[in-house]
Amino acid sequence: MILRFLFVLLASATLLAAAVDPGVGIGDPRDDVLRRYGKPSSIVKRGDHEIFQYPKGGRVAFLDGKVFEVKLPLPPPIIEETPPHPPAGSQVPASPAVSASAPAARATPGSTTATGAPPAATLSPNEPSPMERISREIEQMEATKESDAHASDEDDALNFGELLVSLVLHFGITLLALRLAFKYWEMDALWPGVLAIAGIDLASYGVLELLGPLTSGLSQMDTLQSGIGTLIMIPAIQHFCFNKQLQNAVLTALAVKVIVQLCHIFLFVLLLNALFG
Image (cartoon, rainbow, N blue to C red):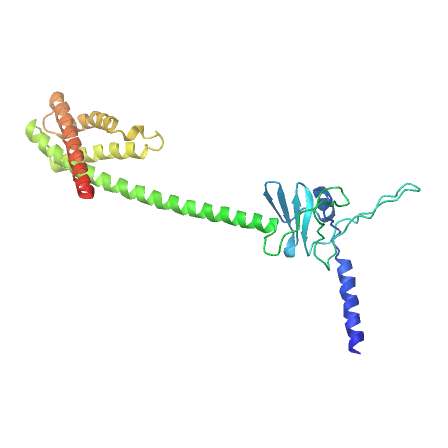
């Protein structure tokens, strides 16, 4: 009774395997697989390797456009291929087929398949298959992209913090330079006017710093920033100060920029001394 039950199970498994026979042979062209099973759910390309991913885990791997590895289950075939009628008296060799109940056939080195293309070399048990190597390379590429994006976000946050500190220092130094220049050139203004002059200069400085990546660093040069800042500061000083003389406004703006540059150099020397002193 048990032997009869096992025989029935074996026969059912054999019929099921024959029903889902993929009909894909080693060395079959890529176009034949597309005509038989249709467009796959995804395609992975890597050099001369290509992988068709089908639903439920089925996949077909190609090397130079020829099948060299098959993983079941594959979807039901769209069309049934009928062998051409051979002419009378001729003999047609049987085409190789991949059985669903056995792994993909691998020929020994030096032999050829029915299509005339050399088969893929037999891999050792510990050596990964070409399809597994391609999958690993794709995963490594995706991990590298994620790490590069994370590093780019960190760099952007660091650059924004440096810019914010630079703006705060520039604003404080400009206020100090304005008060010193006002005393020397007999210029004076209310505190709201002084803050407005420093704010206008800070805005021009910030815009030039932000334009640095677009101008390849040209707008971040000290000479250009000082020149543009002086031209913008002259009308601001003339507008907010009690003394409206243009000559005094020009001299005051020049004096402010000189003091700002000297303060920057002094702070830079202090920083170098703190780091390497």
